Length: 530
Image (cartoon, helix red, strand yellow):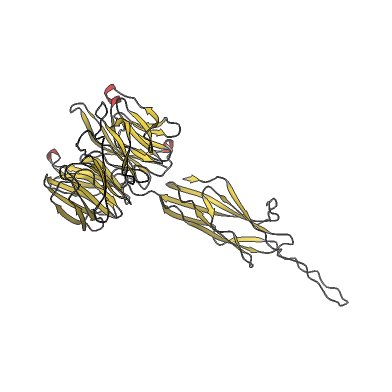
C-alpha cells in the first residue's frame, strides 16, 4: 500500500458574507435583541471513495460536495487541500448560492501499479491565507485507488516484448508466499485472470504437451489440459479470457487449441499444415502464429472463439525470431531483412534490408522488441567472439538501420523509457543501452557462485520503474536502476514474470552437470511484491 503525502495544493475562493444586520423603523417601544445565527458548519456528501483502474489508463474521477450550514459576520473562504502529485482539480471549486461547494478531482494518467491511499481536506476559513479556520468546518475525504497491472499475456509480457512493468518495487518488502515442485511443468508460464498457465510435459521423452492452470496465490492446480498428440510449439498465450497453444504431432502438422482460461474447456481446435516456430504473439484480441523455419508464414486468429482471420504465405525463405506487434504492424525478421505486415490483413507494409547480417540462420529463442517511434530491436545473426547475438536497431518509419551493439547478448532484453537492458555472459554483465544511439550508458558485472556458474546467464530480463531482474546460473538478482547496485538476490535462478496481482513468479532452472546444459527444475516460487 502506498500512502500519498506529497506537496499539498490549496484552492481558496472568497464567499460573500453569510449574515448582515437589518434596519428598523419607528415605534416607541423596545424589542428583544435578535437571536444570533448558528456558526458555520460543514457536512460532506461522501467521506470516502474507492476506484480501480488499469495500468496505462489510470485517470479516474474522485468527487464530493461540501454543504455549509450556519453563517458568520466575517468573510468565509472555502479551502481545499490535496496531493498535487496524485490529483489535479477538475475545473474549479464550484460555489453555489445555497452554500454548497462541489470539488471534483482527476487522478494522474501515468500512475504505476499498486494501491494508493490519501485524503482531501475541506475547510472554511476567515482569510485568504486560511490562517484562521472556522471551528467545526474541517472535513476529510479519504480515497483509495488501486492500479491493476495488465496481464502478462505473451512472451516478455506484451506484444512488443518489452518486459516492462509500470510498478515501483521495494525488494526488501517482497515476501515469499509459496514454492512448489511440479514433476511435469516446463518453464514457460503466462499469468491471467488470477491464474498461472504453465506448459505441461507428459509422456516418455516429453512426447506430449498440455497446460496446467495454477492459483496465483497458492500455486495449487485448478485445472489441466492434456493434448495427447505431440509436443507444444510456440509457447502459451493469454488473450481475451482465452489460453492458446499449438500441438505439433510432427513437423508437417499443427493443431491450434483455444481454451477457456477459467476452466480449461476447449473452445476450438484448428488444424494447420505448417509447424509453428518462434513464440506465438497476441495483439488487440487476435493471436498470431509464425510457421516454418523455411518458407515461413504468418496467420491470425480471433482469440475469443478461435476464428481464422487471414494467412500470409509469402514471408520469405527463412525466418528468425518472433514477431513484435503494435499499431504500426507486425514486425518480423526474415531473409536478412526486417519486414512489417498489417495486423488487419497481413499485407506487406515495408521491407528493410539488413546489410550487416552474417547469416540466414534462425532462432526460436529470441523475439523482435518494439521500442519507440517505429524503431525495433532485432537480435539478428551478427555475433560477438563468444557466439552471442548482437542487438541491432531498425527504424521502420525511415526504413533504415540505426545501430548495432558493441557486444552480443544471451538472454532476451527488456526495454523501458529509452533504455534497453541486456545481459551478456563471461562474466554475467548487465548493460544499460541508449535506445536511440546504441551507446552503453552503464554496466554492472555480477559474478557469484562456483566458477562455471559465474560465467553463464539464463532466463530473461524484466524491468520495473526502479529495478531490473536478471538471472545468472547461480542467483536471481534485483538491480537498482538509480544506484546501479544489486539490492536483492535469491538462490532461485530462472525465468521471471510479474502477475497482475503483483506477484513475482520464478520458474527455476539450473545447470545439469551430466548433460552440461541448463534444465528446468520444475520448481515455481512466488513472492508478493507489497
